[in-house]
Image (tube, rainbow, N blue to C red; front, side, top):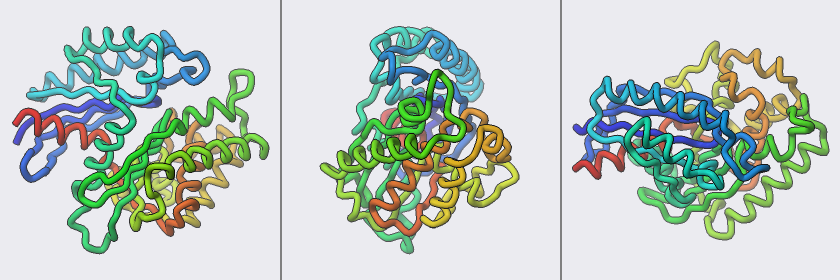
Length: 317
């Protein structure tokens, strides 16, 4: 077993996984997993730059993670940065800060690489489930982008499109610096049209409708699962490999789009950093399910972070 650390820095959150990994069997023994909402992508869609306050929030989380990695004595750290830092003009400021704190340069990966890591993390332990039909469609709904990957044991086709919960919220639901609470029908319709156009782009290269099992990743999907199960608090064990019907996803999405900030914040399983962006994320999930005719989504807590850890372990070997 190889002890590795993996960091996934996305548009909305930064996450750490420290695990012992067998690079031959793929077995992953989790030692520490944590997530911090940093909103690195704050305003990037509008300004094209990472905001100073967003960078400082991210660097503060990196300092916390550096202490955890040192405590566990990980042999290798792999830091992957996704959509927001890929798009920003001043991403060199981000890179320098991460190197100073963690001693490694963040890999600003392409959307296709992001999709490959997500697929590996999500499906590594699903391939032995005979009751799940293949091919899988793995959908990772992030803050700035959504990755679509179709494959069996390996990736067959992948595509990343710029539609995520933060980007959709900022683009369609923010007026005069504040999130509309709740959004108007016109705002919802414009957001839905944007999502549908993104699905059209994804279908140009990924056969979405050939999928027999839809696997959903990341905070928007896991939060919808927690709401569907009416959990008294966020419970990873209850959420991992849970299944949500399309009708239930539609019901939850409709409620989120009609609710106020206070009503969403009162949901016991809701992370405070997702209160304003969860409605957009849920709408992305619903649109995908309706587009491909999926009766349900299998929710996975294992995603790009686990994929990064698997690849880090194989490189050590």
